[in-house]
Image (cartoon, rainbow, N blue to C red; front, side, top):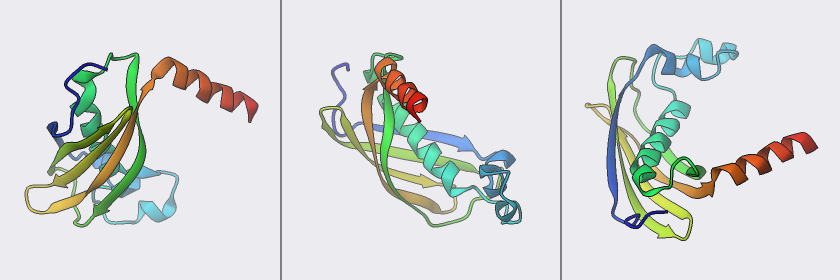
Length: 140
């Protein structure tokens, strides 16, 4: 981990919502999701906020050896966004405790704040993490 990864770091990322990221796209196998309104899915909102956090810290990691994984998400999804609109995510790193990174996160679509909350990520050694995960799969 490079120096400079400190509380106060901010990052912004804008993303145009494609049709593939509406509720029906979250689990295409789900008949229930298939008939829901064609709006940005909460699961994809969470992923977009995570992606923004990853982009925020990437310059401070020994990438790709060091990576981050999400460990906690507490996010509201408070307004619908149809496909074609741009969602802008803003994240702020509020604390660094060893390998644990805590963020405040928010997203808006140009009309409404569509989500906000907190997110935690942990810095990992990708090779070691992957080795352990694959070993778990072999034991299952």
